[in-house]
Image 1 (cartoon, rainbow over the protein chains, first blue to last red):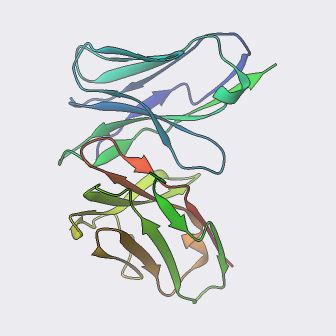
Image 2: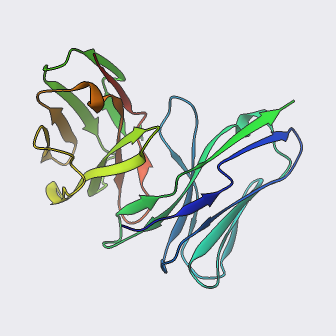
Length: 111
Length: 111
């Protein structure tokens, strides 16, 4: 099946630093989504991207849908302790609602 | 809206026992998904429904797993008989188009 490669696998940063993570694929997709999962909870949708080249912000989060439609990145500015969690990229495959998830980036924020 | 509701949140059972996980999707959503999450395999799609009809069950690991959606507001995932390797967190998600919303998950431990 489709493979989404997320990097880095994990990050340890200090509070206040900016964070950047990305997701790549060998296939073209029409929708890229970014989710965050807190410990003991389900993934929560952060940002949805529907158009190649699209740049979308949600507070301190910014995500872009790559021009080639094979990649996406997520940036978090001025990180805070509650940013801790696992961040997943996801793409729609086949029918509009079926998602394939990346392997996740685990973010740790130290004070 | 209360979001996607799952029960129970935690389930501990002995090998060989039947386990039933329950999900109430967000009202008005016509897609419902069941996922399994483990450290080794990440988030895996097991089955999904559209308008209460199973569309793709290719992710269901074995015949021991079955899922039903008798109406638009309720779905079950059943494992019979359960085995230790079924231990995982099981998530239910619902959507209209593209953007899936996840429940808090059921952590299943089979001893």
